[in-house]
Length: 202
Length: 225
Ligand code: SF4
Image 1 (cartoon, helix red, strand yellow):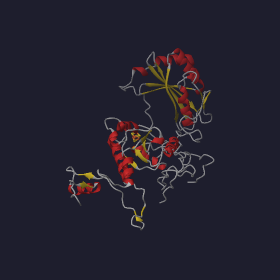
Image 2 (image 1 turned 90 degrees about the vertical axis):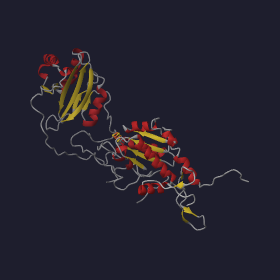
Image 3 (image 1 turned 45 degrees about the vertical axis):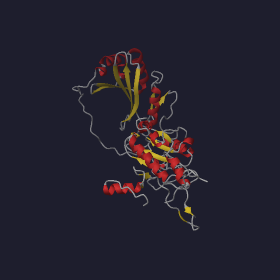
Image 4 (image 1 turned 60 degrees about the vertical axis):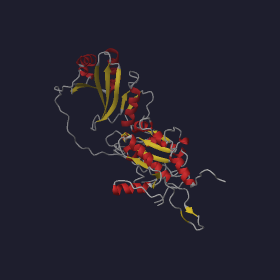
């Protein structure tokens, strides 16, 4: 019946793949860091490569909040409200020293880190961080999304057991035959200074 | 940290640390002295018009500072603007000198566009009567500067058109640039958003350091660890 090639996968893997490559950031640009966030979205650093070029100024359409700049106590209520209006699932990046810890603004008006009222996923150090650092944070969020799974108990074999880790992205070797697992890639590099190529059927 | 919002403000106190005094001698050797700060003609004109009302003229780094009584500020500003060409108010703000007498000071930086001159006026205010006349009707630019000065020091400007706090929340009970105000604020005076949808406002300024984790979304319970 099925003549052409077909693909089976887990629903989570598809959802995670789609989510992680179409993150729409809510640019919460509050201070100087916002300038670097603009560079991150602009053609030179070109975050469109990661599918995140559509900055959404409406919380309803955004799923990644980038808090760029220092947060005052007065503003914190507006930020939490915008965050609550964003649809689930959603993620948050605290960009720069100020958003992460209050930074050099150790004073009465500035919240000492936006994790006091927001669930932050990734903190970016720097004052301001380079756009590359923000891209790295975005890639960390993507990695986090790829590892999310909605199944907590697996009834596949009749008996409830903990679900196995979700399908990770596969990196195919240049000759197209081998498969590199991202975590092993990292380990191998750390140990031997180069990457190993797996056999066809490990 | 009590979860109730305090009904009355905390009484603040400050421990004074003496600092180095500014040099008594005028710094006449400064090579950076600009032609624009040379305003002796203006001072002569002011002394002719107001006489003893000019309390003091100090020169520091080639810049003149003229001290006048606070009652005279509106008249002096109007005279400087109409007769001496100081048509631009660059800035206005307060200083807490932390002295027994005449604790506060308001300074006015004036610029004359036509003569290319700069001048600083200063008026001292005692804690007993924290008021000074507004110069909004002379310089429109003074409006927000005076509101800031009121917000930060609690100095009231008579006849200001709209004297409200400009930066701090309307219900804030302190004046943050006064010397006795602690650097990190008074805990509980500025609330953070609630940690969970049903919870009251967070009065602890450091909930994350005390193990609180804000809820990700309204459906989800805050993780308990
Ligand atoms: S971290 Fe530095 S660049 Fe970023 S908002 Fe703070 S002061 Fe500005």
